[in-house]
Length: 463
Image 1 (cartoon, one colour):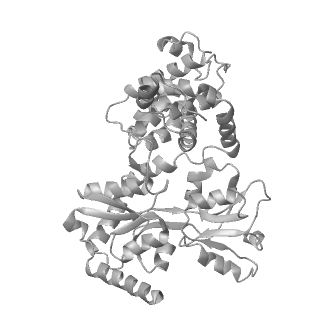
Image 2 (cartoon, one colour):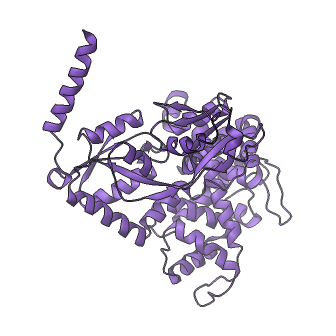
C-alpha cells in the first residue's frame, strides 16, 4: 500500500509545483537561486558574510537589475536539478557542467568558465599515466558531474575499467575519501581540486581526462526569454569589463601557488610551532582588528614562524622587519616574537590605511600585503602601471599583473620610485593568501571581546 502512496504523493507535489510556479524576477524583483555549500559556489566566510565565485557573480547580476537574491541551499546535485525542474528556483548555480545539465534535460545558461577534468591520485602510490592504468583499480566519480559518458567510451576498449558513482557527495568529501585510501583514484573537475589541494598535500593530478568542461547555470526549459537573454548579456559584459576575471581571481588566482612540500611544511609547523605563537597573533588581532590567521600566514611566509630568523639583507625576526620599520613601529627587540608580531600587524594596518578608501576588501588587503613586502611607493607605481595599461588600479587581479613590470622598464613616464622586485611582492602576497586559506580551514576564529568577558585577559585557544 505504501509503495502506491509514495508515487502518488510525488506526482501531486510535481503537479502542484507546476500549477504554482514562482513569479519571474522581473515581476517579483526577487531572484531565487538553487545552490550548494562549497568554496566554488556559496558559503559563509570567516567574517560571517556570504561568499563564493558563483555567489558573487549572481549577486552582481541581480544588483544590476535591482533585484534581491534568495539562496535555496540543497544537499545534493539531484535536488538542485529538481528545484529547477519543479519551478522552485529560477536557476541553479553550483559549479555544474554543461554535460550534466543537458543530461538532466534542462537548459544550459551561458558559459561561466571552463575547467579541466582531472584524475587525482595519492602521491604515496605509483602515478597512473593514462586511463588504461586505472583498469582494475578502485575509481570513483560524482553523480551528475558529467564524467560518466567519457568513462563509458573508454570502457568499450577497457572492459575491466569500472568505477563507483557516489550520490549525495560533494567534491570535498570525494577528495577526503581518496586521501583516506578508500579509492585508488577519483575523477573531478580541476577547479574543484584547485580549491582543495592545499589541505590535501598527499594528493595530486595524475593526468587530464579528455576535453575541458564548460561550467554553466542550469535553467528550466521554459525559462522566460527575458531572463535567458539578460543572463547572456550580463555574462558577455562581465567578460568584457573583467568582472568575471576579478571575481575568478578572488577565489582561484592563488590556488596553485604552493607545491606539496610548502603545504606539508605549514601543516607540520602548525602542530609544532604555532601553539607557542598563537596567543601573540591573537593579541595582535585584538589590537589591530586583523584576523590572527592572516597575521600568522604572514609570519609563516616571512620566517616559517622562527622568531630568530635573520636574512643577509638585515631583516630579522618572526615577521622579518627591517631596522627602520621596527623603529617606526616601536619594536625594541626584533627577535622577541611578541614584539615582532605586534610590529608586523601595526605595519600592515599602516599599509592598508595608506591606500585610497575606494579600494574594497579583499583587494585592499592583498594590495597592502604587496606594499608590506616592497613598500607603499613601489605599489603605487604598480597601480599607475595598471592604469596606464587600461586596467583597474584598485583591483588586485590587475595590480598583480603590473607588479613584474616594475623590474622591466618601459613605464618610466608613470613610475616615481624606479626599479623594484615586483615579482617578489607578487609571490609574497599570493603565498600568504594560500597559507591564510589553510589556516582558515584548520584554525578557529578568535573572538577577543567574548574571551575578554569570560577570562579578563586574552588567552590562546587550545590546539
